[in-house]
Every structure is written in structure tokens, then in C-alpha cells.
Image (cartoon, rainbow, N blue to C red; front, side, top):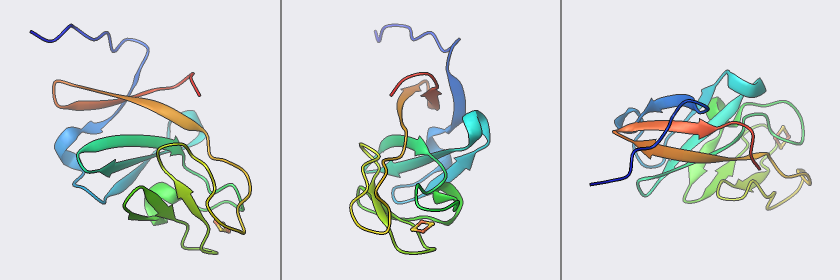
Length: 111
Ligand code: FES
């Protein structure tokens, strides 16, 4: 039996099957959080591209573990938030995700 996970301090993101692999979404929480699904795993970063304001959760194109900002073509690794090419040089905030009982949550106060 899986250990029970407390979801009290977590932000509900979506149901596990709301996203298929290669899809992303935006949450309004914590100034905007982008959630990505890659190979059945969920990753979360700050939503706004670190170059200029552009939603990666709504407008970003996910390719493997990289999200492409469609405004000026910067790329980020969704596992770490690290920028992979110009014009972005600053990392995105990375959030831990928790999946339990088919529901996906974000831990809001962690790196
Ligand atoms: S806003 Fe994302 S690369 Fe410019």
C-alpha cells in the first residue's frame, strides 16, 4: 500500500489525465506556474519566460524535456528551469510536483 501523501500545503494543478505527453498548461497560482507532462512525468516551472513576459504554459511548445518560448525562441529544460539558449539567460523557478490518486499538485515554496 502506498504511503498517504498530505496535500494540505500543495496547489492542485490538474488531474493526471488532463494532460497527455507533450502537453502543458498554465495555472494562475504563485504569479503563474507552467505544468508540463513528458513521458508520464509532470514538471512545473514559473510560467513567464525569463526573457520577456510570455506564457510558457499557454504558448510554449514542449519538445521532449525542452519548452520553446514561441515569442523569441528561447528554450528551457523543464526538469531544471535552466535556459538552454539565447535570448534567455535567467533560469525559470522550478517547482516540485506530487502525483497522488490521479491528481497532480505543485509544492509552492520550494526551489
Ligand atoms: S519572451 Fe521568451 S524568448 Fe523572448
